[in-house]
Image (tube, rainbow, N blue to C red; front, side, top):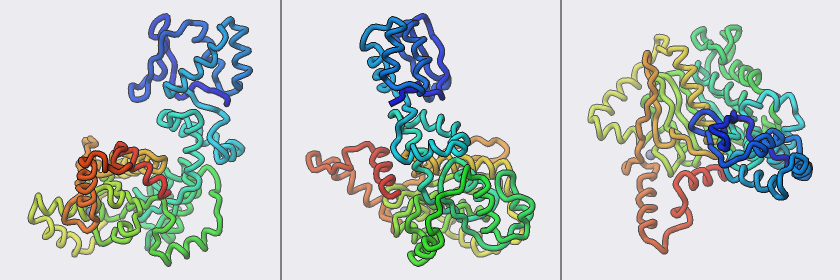
Length: 401
Ligand SMILES: [Zn+2]
């Protein structure tokens, strides 16, 4: 182990013997008491030295025996320590690709803020390289989002769409102007490749694709992101369109712009969180005219160019990509069971819950009831029921990956 105080957190002394690691409250920690000699020793914990060398340096600085080990342990316990040699074989392979890792250094530093154990951050970053995500829809939101995921280190991203690039599909960070007239899928794949820090390890991807198509295009996918060019399919997602995803247990996330409103979510974890069908049923409960409106919206062919504020599209793509990455990294983002929305010109993001609905064939509401009953049952409670909801979900879904 080569201990390293997480470099993402800027240090400052609150007083003579208290150190604050980090500025922003979300991840800042205060450690004390700490004497000035120990404080200066922190500079040596930069990942370039192993423990034996650090102990020797400590002795030279007059620190008592065992002090260095105690400090390292204390920092690790507080989640402030990383290991510049840890993370396992995939992390080692990534370290060998210096140009790739250099591109991802800010993301690695950011991951270190949420990955508690030394070596976890690079382990998560390296794990992204073996993931396969499908993005359905190559409009402004879809291609920016797919490019962001590629740029953040996700190994394989497959953008699906039909037709050819229109002038209004073009966006900074998305489809370039010189792709107008090309097939959307091809242009989007090229944009994604250009955004990636290197060429992903492509092992017979053509074969893989054929296999997937046979099995309904969902097997082997860590996540499907639905970014339809027509915002209606995000505002009022059609439950029938997600049936194969629900049936195969494939996690999926909705993101898009409808008129002047950007939508991120829900992230659907089939059987665990509310889906498009639950959303639809809930709305029909609250507003009996909802089904009639949706039928009218769906029946008319959209002939005009839909409204889509470029900055809102970029914002939606960024927020949705963040939620997707958090999920892929093993966390549970707040879009699981909720939709985040923001409208022009205020851009005030707010969340609306998407509750599991008892009438929805996905069965999440029923399952939830069963679990609550078993938790109430005391000694008969299942292992899963004893874990916090987030831990259980992320555990479950990491395994799927
Ligand atoms: Zn449902």
